[in-house]
Length: 312
Figure 1 (cartoon, rainbow, N blue to C red):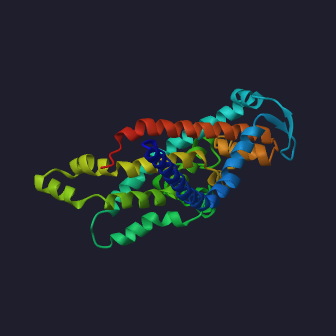
Figure 2 (cartoon, one colour):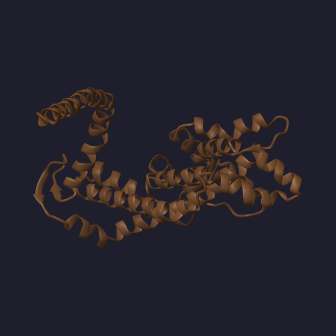
Figure 3 (cartoon, rainbow, N blue to C red):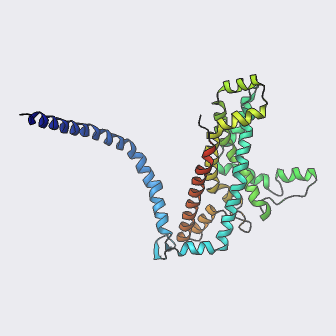
């Protein structure tokens, strides 16, 4: 007789667990249905192309990109020994070095100026962010005319100063720097808007207390602005780094990888191998190498850079 209450209580607990599972199941199904459109889009446009690219990197392919023969790591070995790929890797690293630090510093400087409370500052905020509304193609055409050795305004200005004219896009010494300058100009609008939003979210009481203490502007910049803006700066640096590795449009319009492959970055080299030389296996191997380079740089940045980020 004493064991019956225990049996009944155990059966009640089992029934309760089954009911909880039945209640939780529709919620899981509902959550999956909400995620299903995103999962389908990511699968079609991200996961499948990544897996397909990795698969093709181990094969020799025909002109239509169909695998013909399995070669293992031969494509990667050939690329690492290729002088052309080494030049592309060097051009990519130099391009990242030229664009990311200069672009972030310029956007930070403009955002600090535009954050000042003076009359008419809204006009300058609009001008500083205006490059965000222009396409890469339109911006590249503008810079192509500015760099033109015959009618370009840049050569006219340096001629007025007394310097000799420069073949901006035709000289291997200046071509990569010229493309980097145009890229910095194109990306400044986005970085400026994000940094300006971060500056306007900083608590004004911090600056009021600093003014009462009588500290200088640069002290406030170093001790208040930069630490409080560090999450936004970390985001901008990460996004700029990834975008600089993936630059294609301005290279294609301005230089097409020349002269003498001085601007033949990895992304443009992938395009040439895949759609001009029809060597999809080599292009896939280069895309795989580029993916792991970006992944390594991003992980390294999160490991080292995030230590200096202050979220409060």
